[in-house]
Image (cartoon, rainbow, N blue to C red):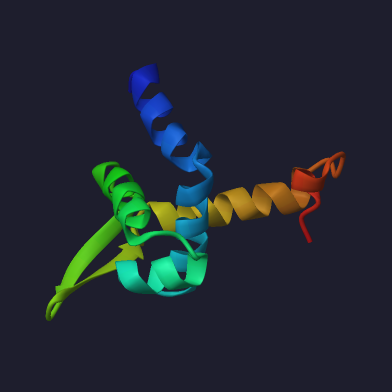
Length: 102
């Protein structure tokens, strides 16, 4: 795997709006309208971020009538997020507000 692949993947995770979307989708699958309402962000911004997340298969999309329902990739992303959560709980230094994981 090339370092540019890492850059693309982690750039997606470094974007604050995309992280908020991931956090919401961790709760349950949602459409753009639901995400927009819950995050109080314009639908166009949500859609743009979802396109980026989808390009790396971080999110998956499935049609439901006229809607498109977005969910996290269960095979790879959910396990990665669980690893990150476990790592943070065990190894986070607590030296800054970002590190104060409970």
